[in-house]
Image (cartoon, rainbow, N blue to C red; front, side, top):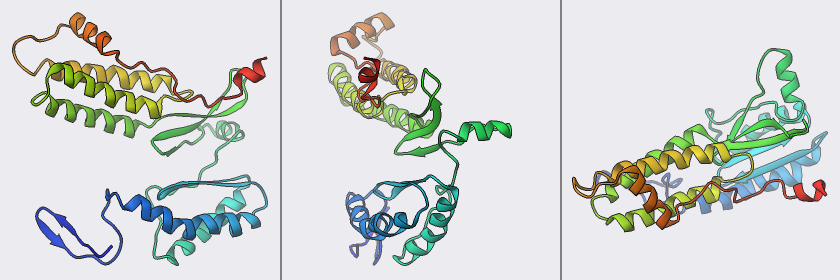
Length: 249
């Protein structure tokens, strides 16, 4: 934490925190927030709640859920003081208190609004329904994250076309696309995975055809190359309804 940082060739001393993006930051976040937040919530705050209280954290990003609005308001008030005691502060842009759950949709409709959504770990969580009309938490790739990953893929393709042969570029692109789907191809997110695959495939087609003026692909030839590489498909990798078959039987 005292090693400083280098930016644009200039060294800058520091005595607190770690640079954003540092591989050490997630590790330190988990250690520090385990004591600053995890233990406090589980051993103290949740014990005083009137209803159910749940807490989920990944590094410095977390979601707290409460059965009653009063508990949520108390948590929001006490959280600021708790973090200040550890020389931390909440991000005003990312901190929200919303109504979410099986009653949120009906309550929002009474005043002519839609139930609110929230984004956590790259997914937008929203109030949905099962085929039988029961409440269900659904998730889709957040619009911001989808734009970021497609932009990053385009930047990679633009650089790779100058240093990789077509076959190698296709194989490495496949690994990147498969990695995205391994994380985002979950229950209820098929549409966004299809959108990602559609655009990623066309981005790759565009930049592979700019490798040279000769031997460019037409779409039919490119499709055959994708089949040769066994291009990933947006099949669900993680079923969030593990008891679907049990209930059906």
